[in-house]
Length: 69
Image 1 (tube, rainbow, N blue to C red):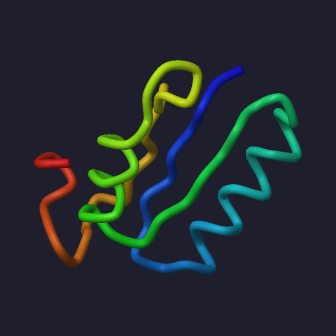
Image 2 (cartoon, rainbow, N blue to C red):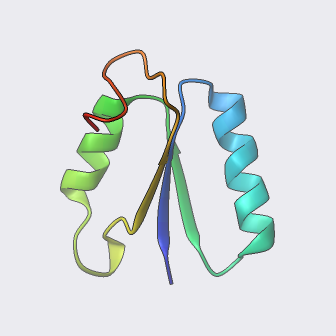
């Protein structure tokens, strides 16, 4: 199973992306956060089988540059 993290300032857009990916790949675990800081917290706390495999990030985060994430 793949663990996907979607990072988007717009919660509705992030939720839409989660639903679209989940419909295509129900075997994936997809989570969504609305800031780079929250994404870093999730990454730091993800270990073992719950480790984040892929991050999909909006390019214009409000709290940090997406490339820094």
